[in-house]
Structure formats: C-alpha cells, structure tokens
Amino acid sequence: MTFVEGEYESIFIETNISNNKTVIGEIYRVPNSNLQKPLERYDEILSRLKNTVIIATDQNMDLLNIESHKHTAELLNNIFASSLIPTINTPTRITHSTTTLIDNIYVKFNDFHTTVKSVILMTDISNHLPAVCFISYNKPYSRTNQKPLTFEKRDINDNTINLINNNYSTY
Image (cartoon, rainbow, N blue to C red; front, side):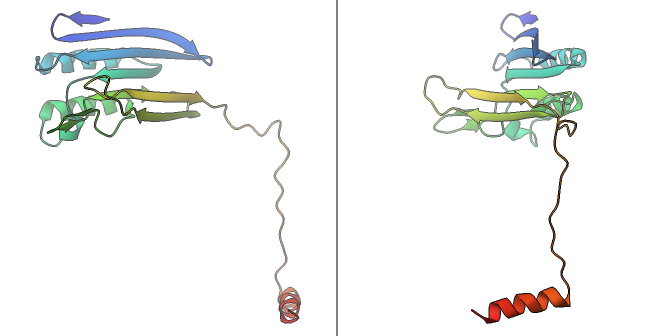
C-alpha cells in the first residue's frame, strides 16, 4: 500500500481464486498532481507483481492522448512492459465538452485459460462511468476423459459424381 496525501493512493490484497493466487489492487492519482512521481510509484508496484494481477485505476492520465502526452505514453509503456493489458478502451469520463479515458482495469494472467470481459456502465451517479470486469477461469482443454474425435467423409470420384447428377436430374 502506498499513500501520499493529496497525490497518490494504492491498496492491494492477495487472494486465491480458483486455485490461482491473484493480486487485486486499486491505484488512484489525484488530478493535477505531480506526474513523474506517480510514474515512479507505478514502476515500483508493477515490478513486484509476479502472479495473476487485476488493477483498477483512476490514474487521471488520459489514454486517448498517448500520442501527445509523454507521461501518459510512459505509463502505458510501463503497463505493457509488466505484461498487463488494459481492458477498457473507450472514454470513462464524459462531460459536455470533453471525453477522456482516465479509468481502467489492467489484468495479467499466468493462465491462458482465462476469459476477461469488461463493460462501462452508463449512469449519472458519478462524473466517472463505472468500469466493470468479469473474469472466468476456464479449465484447460483435456482429451483424457473425452471420446476420440471422429470425422465423416464422402468419397468423391467419377462414380459418386454421376450418382449425384442422376439424383438431381430426376427432380
């Protein structure tokens, strides 16, 4: 956990979901606060996360501006370098004059049999739209307890083609 009054807050727990150790965390950067220090804190936190990870954020850095804002581009590069994937790709804060993508849920799974679905809820309960992430831990495909695959086929040769033609010509 990191807490810097008026600048940065984070909290993490480790849990065991479906026999997978999972770190779940939340990171908040206060708007209009220092940008470089939170990036250093992100790096420090991300370097320690080795298991399956789910991080919800209100980073107050607009991912729609990665081309024009170097700190946001650096944040996203660090996220990707830590094998995290953003699950939200549309604006999460919408006003009469602006749309920004400043909230996200980042995930990293060591198991490739995981399904992630994210949505943004359209509501006016806050000036940020709630982002929700659904995660399913699927069992890996195993053929040990299943019947063998069988394939049906038809022989295609001159004789079968003639039979097909004859059957169609009678209609």
